[in-house]
Length: 200
Image (cartoon, rainbow, N blue to C red):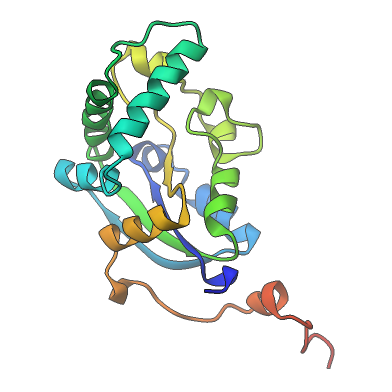
């Protein structure tokens, strides 16, 4: 597969829609030169959200371990030393969060799209996301606040973490028929080897 054919899943979460940031978010990805392959609005059911997060069978263990490490890095005592117990609570919060209202699911395509989208989107925690990223510019939430309120951190967007993860997630959210193959004029500039056709 050529790098330009790489795809990723983006889900604008309920808070992104409620804050009227859909156009801004889409524009950020479009301006880079990425191509929208599919888009739809839905209210996901809790079991659909759970399946999304557990497509990777190691997700719960890894997420629990990362959370424990994050607490320890901040000099705080984690709520449990058991990664599975911690990730179980995280999963319940995510199910509540993503099923609270409509979301917009999208598939984007382009060279190195997974890595580029994550860079533009910003880190998972808005508080520590860089200025210029979507989360850094538009959200003021933090892990500390989310933990105090026993909820998921509100960070506007889900973005696939790897190419393999993207493939699983896209298949979960979209059928093949919902992804459209088409040409965009700018691809001639982005991907044409010799930039043929600029001059008459």
